[in-house]
Length: 294
Image (tube, rainbow, N blue to C red):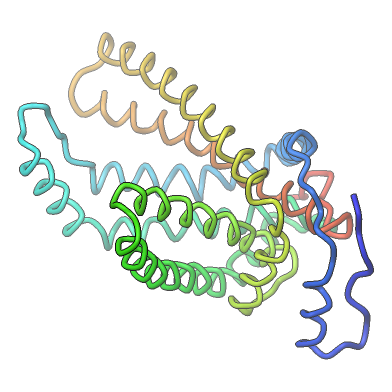
């Protein structure tokens, strides 16, 4: 692994960022990243369970109770299915967006707990997560805005020079590329306490340079494996609940178990982001090896 000299002290901010951009590319080792992620989860298990319960499970369960997804049956026509989904989103989207905000705070809080070697208290992790949350939210809005504009321009240009199917494939690949290049914004903000959304996006782009395929394979294969296991477990749970319960209790219990499984998967996803960040940013940003004190 080749590493050149990093940023020198005393540089002006603009020049400092240019110097950081010259650092040689670090190749991601997926096996080491997974081992690091599992160690971080094991070392902070109790803390992460509490954060996941408050910031993941409760909001997701609340969304399933107050804005349940519509039941779409095979008897409906395609037009009816689309109309039903549109009506659901029109009435529930503001609530769903509001309930997604605690999840963002939870992700940042987990990253602080995993990445800060000073091992802050649980309250300190939450305060720091809340502190960078406005900047993180602004960065996500900026990413969505840039992607929307780029998507429109790219689709229009691609549609003029290639067939619709080729254009669709190209747009999907461009979307994955863009998502991977900005995937480390949250770890950057949580570890480096960067409050400038544009600087955090730029740092994520710098860190992921030359590793798009490796990161996508690592995250994609892990996500695929999780959802296979999740689907099998939820199928088994559904069969058991059908035999034991009926009506609303059956639905709520199934939703609750599903939220717990998704929270576990999301916790490992956050740990994978932390592990990727640590490896690409260097040992200076290493994770906290122990559990944050309560």
